[in-house]
Length: 305
Image 1 (cartoon, rainbow, N blue to C red):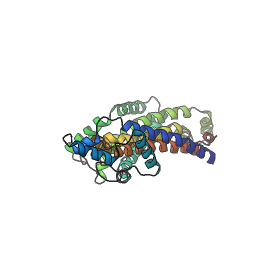
Image 2: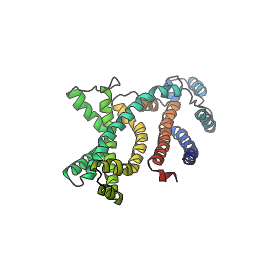
Image 3: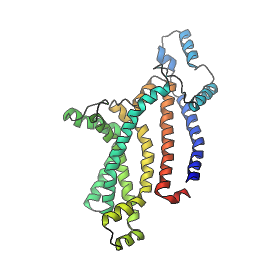
Image 4: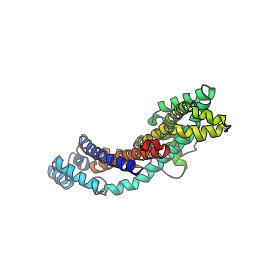
């Protein structure tokens, strides 16, 4: 197990370096001048040049890249052009809101999808199975930027059950979590059903049934455990997607997390803050993939070899 973990950590290094490099150069390809955004197009040329010099934007791109790499490995991503504060500090302040939304959305998706997937597999081609698969297809087909406003119109404006926007108490997270978790729940339910169907027909389950084990024990203890590998894959990969995919949902519901911060920093051409946000999303995705690999090894020891 130790050698497996060390191998995965070793492979993480070139991946992280590649992500950091792509983040830097892609951000600098974004059209627009942050100096003009900050001072306005009517500002004096001397003032623009002074600000560009103060921000280090007059340095060669290679120098800026070297400074960026140094900052990444020393956890110093510079100062935000717009907020005049440390990028790391700003991101640290916004991370709890985004994690709260992502974890709640994942919880909603898992609580809905796993039971539906199991029931659909056990009652294959029944009315329940067909209905749940139709609902999952609808869930995958509904984009966040459409579902979010629909939920706001129905449950906030017309029924007045939940707040329209903001982050204030339990009620404010319900609609964002449903919006973000719906597509994931639909995907997980289909994957759970498919994995369960592959396992249910195995001979070892027939042997367990022949010993007189209750159906619930056969399904939950034996079949579900062996069907979880593909489901864990989707959960791990999609949790990384929830962190980055929360950008749209956070803006729809004015949820003050990293997604809203990222959009605002793009609009102001705040290079350090944009780089910091994208770097956080990218590294989160990479680290979650690593965690998923380690969970594989726990669930199925054969993977360690």
